[in-house]
Length: 132
Image (cartoon, rainbow, N blue to C red; front, top):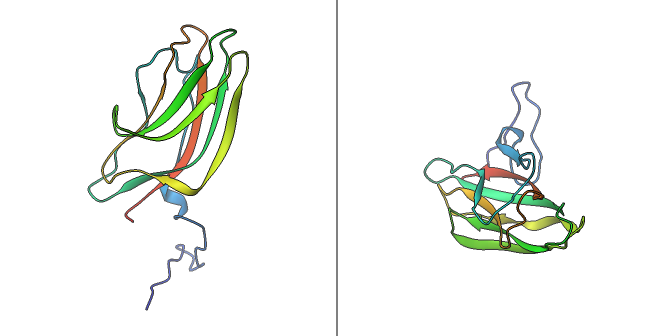
């Protein structure tokens, strides 16, 4: 058997991956990533709750320094995704299907591998949290 999930108005919720209240997004800070220090994109959930990354957009605003960009499961943790951001506006956008799945009660972190100093790499993530 299965239980249906409905809104408070009794409408059945039929969405891939989660219910709307569990979606999250991360937008890069002004100036983006400028050094190799990891940045928390999504805080750890409660015990048993995982963070899932559904999509990513990356743009490198540095004129001459290209860099690898990583999404990590935990602070300086396991790399879930690696991508390349070419200098002078290079980057990429991806939708993960299936989504990247983090460990329960663990944050999602992003980082660049080569320091871009004052002209950073802009990284945006979208995802959801769930207990599965």
